[in-house]
Length: 223
Image (tube, rainbow, N blue to C red; front, side):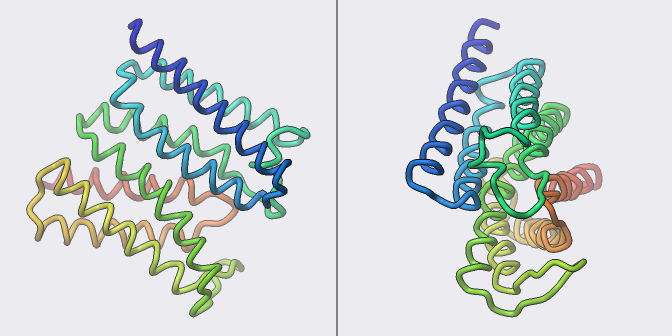
């Protein structure tokens, strides 16, 4: 329990330093909130990858996630954490992030498979911002879903990166045969790509990992 608590405190400090660094680059270097927010999004996901290894008590993970959920809620309308909240569009993504991290932690604990945690979190942390970057820098094939503009290039970037993550984790963590990894990976990556395409106002932070988890659960129960 002592190690769990120390690791939890260490991760809490790491997240506070992350938020502080985002505030620094936002205010001092005048970086746009969209970029500082993406920076926090990616590093948050990378730090969260250590949870199953460093914290074996789900109550401590809940405490950690709940603490940052409260911080994010309280600062929405305040002058603090504008590096996260200061985007022009309406979004609930930052608030949903700690919720989905804890949910994925419970999922991997229940099934006893790390892929249930690592895959949804990595797709959210890497594929989602990568799709946004490609979609904005190479805006090819614009299309509209529920009034929101998307690009084929962004969706393709999401699919390819998600598929690469699937293959790496399925074969690396689960020793899945390459043919099965390709099929399951393609299905999961496509499902998450569709979830990202139809989700707006930050709800992709919920729909992407939820979709990935659903595909994993169905596969686990069937095979």
